[in-house]
Amino acid sequence: MNNNSTIAQDIEHLLKKASEANTVIIAETTRFLQQLASSKMNTRDMAGMQKQLFKDAVNLFVKVNLQHTANLIDMGVAISKHLNEKFNGTPGANSGPVGAEVSEKPAFELKTSAQAGKTATTAFLLNSDKSEPVKCELFHSVFTDESNPENRLSVISKFTPQSFELISGASQRIDMTIAIPVEGKPGLYRSHIKVQGFEHTHFDVLLEVAEPTFSAPVEEAKVTKKAAPKKAAKKSSSKGPPRAGNVKS
Image (cartoon, rainbow, N blue to C red):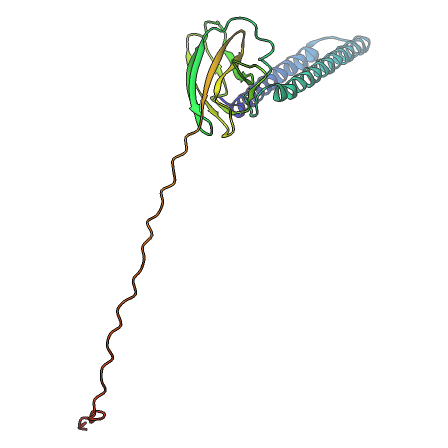
């Protein structure tokens, strides 16, 4: 499940909620008018009720604005963290700030390899034992050299799917591709993968980069074209041009 499908589901949920709200508002308004028509309220009681309704409306309006402001603050914090994730991770949409935060032992390790300039592939399964559905999104840290952590490998990675919803008891297969640049140095590199929704666990990917192999160019055989032998020139006939035939009308 990608981000577009998640947004579509949120919009569908919002429209459904608006429809249900309209039904409740119409029913409650009808009930209020019926009670008002059957009641024996005087002008003083009506004025008091109007003041109370106005007070309740103002309080609800203030609460809505406070919640909206809190949502805007949360969105600003999330965007700020997301911007820093792009710098702390590897290039691409799947990197995240999980390299410096991970100190526990990984739940498991995935091993894959490829030559520099090629693409490495791997896959894994995720399952959930939580009672509620979990919205998951995958990120990984920068690939660092096992022998020298200061050496980093810049790759272009992709998770398929990158975000999805995982229900209890179900499994989700995730494919991962890692495009290694041609100038990538041979070695063993490690990256930490974390799944949003399962913040208390992580696993690692071990990527072995081998030197690229180049095949020797095949030389084309040179073909020398021999000149065709010259034909002897025919001797001209001494009888002159041939006579024209008789043409009958």
